[in-house]
Image (cartoon, rainbow, N blue to C red; front, side, top):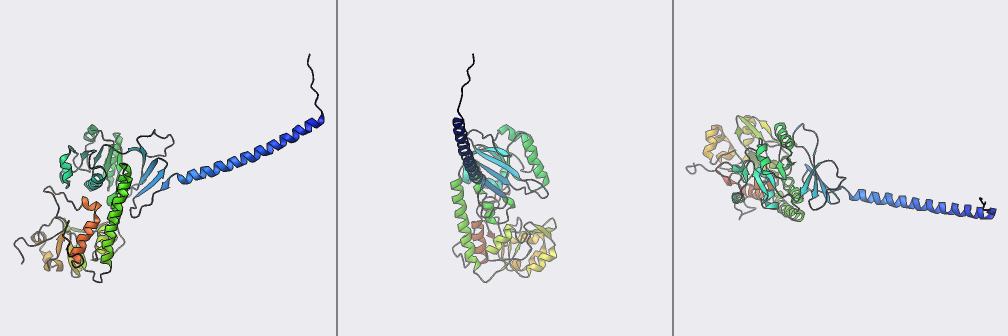
Length: 399
């Protein structure tokens, strides 16, 4: 029926010893394997989400994680909470299943609408405006490159028509927001299913910080190398000019802007306009604080500062000294006005009011700096011809 197989005790002991030996080997192997996996995982963790160092831009963070990139755009609207996160994924690969939270943008971007004229130079550099379907404030765009396109006019950037944008079916809408109302406009566009990418280059403190946003557009249009090269060229040009002006002992005092609706708004002492003046070898008189934003001052404060000013820059929409006197006859008592040292940044404008200073100047602060050095210290750049600026004179000639 059934037979019982007999085994001697020595065979049993040998089997037990061999089993223990195999268990020890298995334990050592599993421990080593666990260590390898931990080290490998740590290596992967270090390789993932590698931050891309930025020199001057402070309102965007770039992190690489394998084939995709995470953009974290800080919200520039005062009082608004939360950053805006975008995950850039190459369009030629399947969508990874383990992406972190954020709005997915397939790159390179092929079609887009644009709500800000200050972004035009970035789009022109990286895409040649080929994919631009619609542009807000189109009549205010300075570059003539737009004339050769069929770009739709989307109206004001602070209140675009969502239905009009939807009819164009862009992959992305490049937008800005500096007030709660403008931020609400963007959220409304997103509620229609549009992929809105917030660009806040305008809130950067340093002029080169604004330029460095070209690296963001390099990622969006898969032209990283070209973007890095362009940034480095502009940075080198700017810093070379600033270095030449920094050794000058004479720092002439400078006034900026003019009164608007009875209020004189002046840039903060650490804003990009103030930095440009200092880098050009001037002394910015109207604000010595650490503020990076503009603030109102009264006429008496400006009038007192004018006694120490040798130059006056950016007086609104003036095209002549006559415009200043018509606005406020008291300007005639300001020292820069009496000495004919008033310069405005409206040498390149359109009939509708578009300004290249606020368009291409966003990407070319080195050209702005060259203008300012030529104004404040003409001996330093004797062959320079003003590009964005012009000297204001009396319409009927000198008085």
